[in-house]
Image (tube, helix red, strand yellow):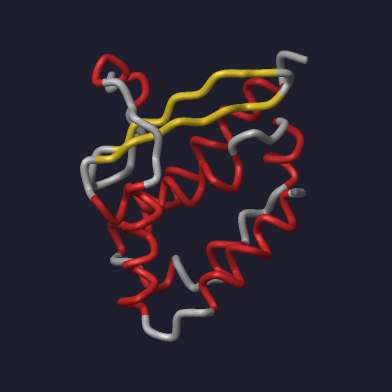
Length: 139
């Protein structure tokens, strides 16, 4: 599935819920689907700066694609990072860097978060882009 198709699927999924409470519930469920994140990986180097709650993001490169794994100590934030890595994990650095990440606006996520969570969302996106940019620079 292309990145555009994945983004469209998320937009469609979110459009099924009319109330933001239901969308938050969906985010919580997404957070529960994250793979286990080892305690040994919860280091300061993997901590995303700028998030009110703690969010760890790790990655590896397989076949030219970035595979992300993440965790958070807050349930909604865990859902947000799960949504992002669901979209961007398994993509090439070029695919990630070509994304404008507008999917977060299209689903109304950014404006329906508290200011501190919205800042955290921006920090998560910035970190994903930074990782992709760093790997892209290695090629």
